[in-house]
Length: 628
Picture 1 (cartoon, one colour):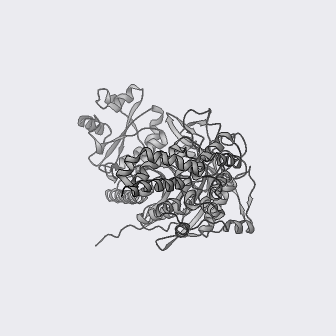
Picture 2: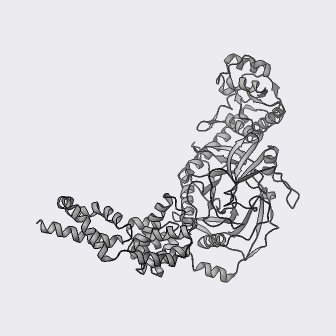
Picture 3: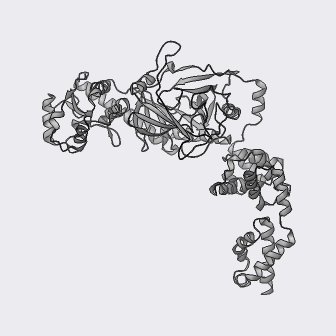
């Protein structure tokens, strides 16, 4: 009889940073490198909800005993990020973008929005909570002609950026904290790993259509809620590589199936529930060749062992590629007690741990052939709680799959992070008033909804853009600006090349183009469209504006007065062609491209490339025709 494949239930949460100012202060959204301008240290503690309950995830994090060091920068951090000042009103552009996304998904937007505090005490927020607000519920997206329901669309502040871990201290950068983050959570209606990936792609496309999605590594993150029949829901956090989403889903299915197989095997063996009974074994390893144990003892740590009755062969069972059930136990030790790992009998002898030592330890712990044992190296004050954790997680193996939050690993596997959070971690933000959303406001936003990909490509073709430029522009953050500029009179092709290529080149040259206002940029492309500013001078106008702070109209006027007239262009190009007559006679019209760079360099970018090309062609043709 064929075994029926386990039924997958999967939901997706996509978190996208927005290219606006920070959400609850007026700082710019910048990520910084290098030395911080100042730093400070905090300890965080959980607080009870309005019902007097503590969130399980917050309690576990508190028990880990970490302190947190924060690095801050003057140009993108303020007292709000430091939790030394109340938050300011929500950024209007970020809120508008979230409302647009909701309308594109046909979600239901309430008439009043409330900011909530979500308890998070892992150090990623200086206040011990994350500010978040529900923007809408319901709606859907279409994936391969199938509607996937939307559960919620939320706007929240991003967390601080982790830099390093130093013992019991975690170091964070505050540059990322407060950047607006839109979260789109689907209903658990995804049925296959491939569908999960396609759904993430569709949501990513939807977000990029707004022209407000930040780009680059870490700006978009996906979380997955996954379970299979007879398994349990787990929340897989931090999937950054979109093309790996199906792999993560497949690996979690594999893990839960393996845990169910372990449960069935333990039930078949009538394995008793494990209990924490640690035994100190430090004296047994005085002459060990195991470097990890030897090094631990030299640091003043102790060695402890514990029998797991009836678990022989279980700890070595594979649950994901390169990961065994023993690895799951080690993950719990790392997360809860900062104990780096464990040894277990199914993998020994190994790591310098001899067969003789294995036999001696098994005898010391009174293990039979049906039993397994684990060994840890840690401070004496951690031994009892660490072994209790191992016993509890091993005991749950008799039930099957635990509900929990897991971290995505780069190779497609996952590791235990913390318990699933509950409703007890949410309570109202008392420092901010609610936000009223009027019908008129939604009607106005509805007139600004971004075009679909198909509509954009059709429009760009009509504008005369090449297929290459149209493809680059369709999901660019410049698309909305480009469409508005062309509608007002900008030259489509020149503007597209300037936005997609010239600005990128200026960024590579160290020019911070993000500092320019959209109004100034619009003036530049419209001046070109009116014939008041040569194409070759657009970048120069932008650089002068950023360097001097002068009004863009004044800069454009000055550059226009200095632009080269047609006679001067013609004279300089005639000279270049004459000096390269031999090259022209040999290559004919192909010499146009060869001499174009020399011509533009000679004219110092003060002439339109089309005019230069026309004159070059004419002068070269004079020579080629005279030689026929």
